[in-house]
Length: 537
Image (cartoon, rainbow, N blue to C red; front, side, top):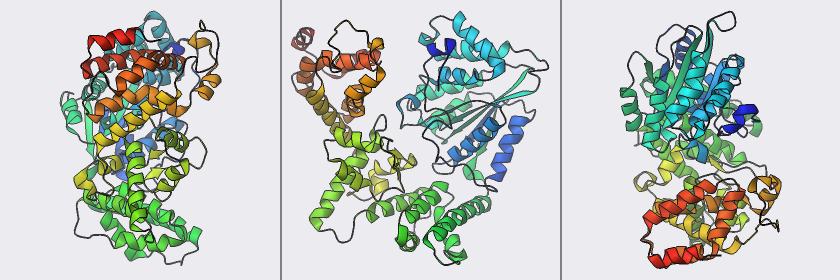
């Protein structure tokens, strides 16, 4: 998104919008599915209900994000979507609320009635980006909205904001602050302001909504919908998706059959993510699609809980990636590679392309690609070079990091050990790569802003940028005890200035300062270390 005028001063989370670049394959609700919940949201948004907040909650995999995208798309097409912010643990800017307000304000400024008021608000509030989220919200959102007057151009205007996966905001105080902001909206005759929030019904969010007056918010619980209604929607979804498999593989006209669809609906236990994962698993089987369908149907029938059924299909996908013809030694090697690659993917602070991930892990790219070859049902791997690897759904992260849920030690990932592995690889990569004047400028006085971005991207590859940005986080989350005369000391002694130079070139110098401060609280630093770093060159 190209920012112009005063908007250039505001930080912007580029991946926050429902239709941001790279989200082309994110699904919408199929016709004639989720009819009840979609109609309720539409009636609330378009009607005179005084409650400006609509909280759509549901367990993982019940289809909240698909519903949110569908509503966002509809109101975008109508010209009534003010903004959307889809939280995600996969993206640095989307896992916390730091850029939430400014990103919402930038999107609202696209509306003709709010462009001038928001531009004026930025100009009148110098340094607003350094203020609290509440001050930002009042100056950049509430004040511009309050300036609107009812008239021929603004009367009955509907502005809808869609906030998805608030539970993916990884700081409880961030969740609380977002809800506090959203609970404060101006009452104006000019605009009907509506905010749709989706999330899992987790404790921090339930507590947050408990502090919002009942007169201000409406709740809808997805997993309380009649089971027959949900089953019908999942049945329609399965018929559509497997119908495409039938056509592409020239299977019989009666495949997979009414009874098979019925059995799959029963196994889904009301989770759309189960159905979606099953269909991807079957589709990716190619000529073995029918065999994969049988594998799914033959799974353990003793588990009835939705989470248990979802875990079973994740485990089935993982086990299928281990070919029967492998020797025991080859199987052990595959297990190690899967844990290493998947463990890294699920804890990355920002997603990376396959090539960059391989470089970061000091592993041949073909090994990474082969490890993921049969996992397209759970990992989104684009065929386009340079596209990042993402999980189809965050529930897989919960599954593989939970020893009890995963249930198979071959695949379970020890989260702390995975963070330690990534921290070690980050430090090794930086130690082998960082050097003075890494971009070859040969002009010490050059400002970072004057360096061409293409040169920075060429000289500082994505995996190097990642290592420089996140090695401290992985180190801290590994939980290991550090000493001031070990690997970290040696790295900082040799490369502190080189590291800060890279952060400056990629516009993240302030984060380097924060990382050093956090390291000081994490390591018992001796005076010798401080003195040594002060003499670094």
